[in-house]
Length: 514
Length: 125
Image (cartoon, rainbow over all chains, first blue to last red; front, top):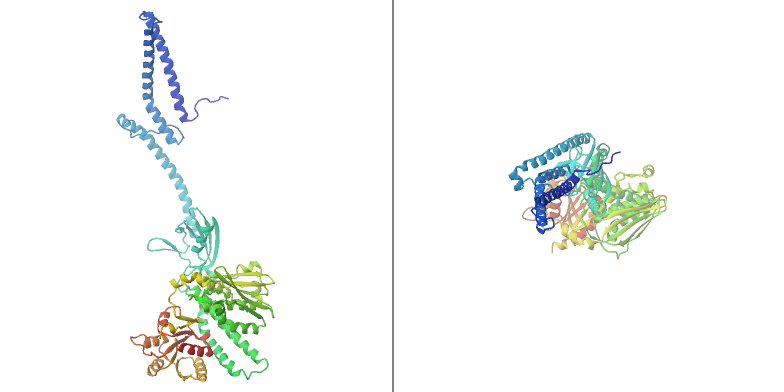
């Protein structure tokens, strides 16, 4: 097989070529000089041994060689530049500097046009190439866009500034007056897309998150849809956040409509409850000396039941308000023990009536918290109610509190039936009820949902630890007042001078009138 | 405690009678009217120490009564404390007017007669 010698790529050609030519010139000059030397000797003009002879011959050789080299270099210059231009447009790496066609010299000689032609040809070729691949990409993109627009899922991609860069047709999006695309998703409480992205930007390179039952509009607006939203985050990617939205309107809307109806009904129910609780209160005093045997115990059960009924109605109304984004918290400095006092009698009665032992140990020395008294009371009531419901006859329910960093933790512990881990993660979802509780315990599945919503609206958190068969601990963490006082005072002036009384208030006249 | 006068503007008979019964027992002198117009007239004709005001009333809503009594240049009932009692909790709309003109705003279902008496006593302190 023949082995190819010499330059393999274009840029190797020029040094080789110019080397050969220089050797050729030097050799030819030596031959010419020898011939001239011979002629001088033969003519007898100078002797071979004389200095004059060598001076003339040497001068002749040097001048001739220099002249010829100069002629060759300048004569091959356009060839060299053409070669450099070709190498440059071919994309090959080279030490040759690509010539600038706009030099004065080229302009004068007209060589500029030739160089420019080479560069032009190359850019036309490039364009053709890009057009072809773009066309191919465009076709592919069009078919993907068309496909995405006909699915029932919404797809939204966001860049690192959280701007919508793509949204398919089914995605809930509107464009505002500035032409910016806005995502219409009404997240509940603190668990929003923005808060998740905040934490992603701070802590994650890649993360995923799922929200369920997220509406795009308020309850009274037409065409309201519900989505399960799956988000994935990839730091540094052009589409940093990708949202996949699964339209679950059909399955969720039924519950929502029921809840709307129930909210109206709940307001109605408050009328009869006022009467029942009121007369029980009146009769409790009047009949205290008349009731015999277990009659007073039965009377207690009436009181307990009417109080529970009232609590459930509050849960329903607050859930409805929360879902309408109308749940307002009036945060104020309060003691855990004072909050508990508002439900204490009721809880004592409730535990007693259900034969549970209620131990309440709330240290008075705990720092004050920022809380909405009525709704946090409702949360404690819900947790104790659950603890009673899911524990055994004669079992105990413990309510304790302790400081934990900037928070005060209030825990409700029972030694009841507990639950497996698979249940715990879904516990705070609306209408969630474990299979077991569906069968054995009555309930609506909104108690924990609204409790979480309330606690989070108070700037706190709610958590649970549970062991199947052994019991559960629900913990509510509320911010210590002094840690949030500045923020509250800055944003919440409207309630100064109002003392909360249940879901209502009484004016503190010592601040207003003399 | 010297006898205090109370006007109760409440259209629900069960609830009205319940308040009358326990407030009388507690030693208050109490007048009861069942519609908004009568309520406004009664409040202007006599100076009560406390006015218990329902919101959802026939003829004239509680908020209108409150506006008429305290919304003008002059407070027509300067000596009275107004306790709004309702079961229809508002979502913010007339809340500002309430906070301006009423002395207390209570949810009936949460307030038993005993509690109401303690609030009436508290508010006058």
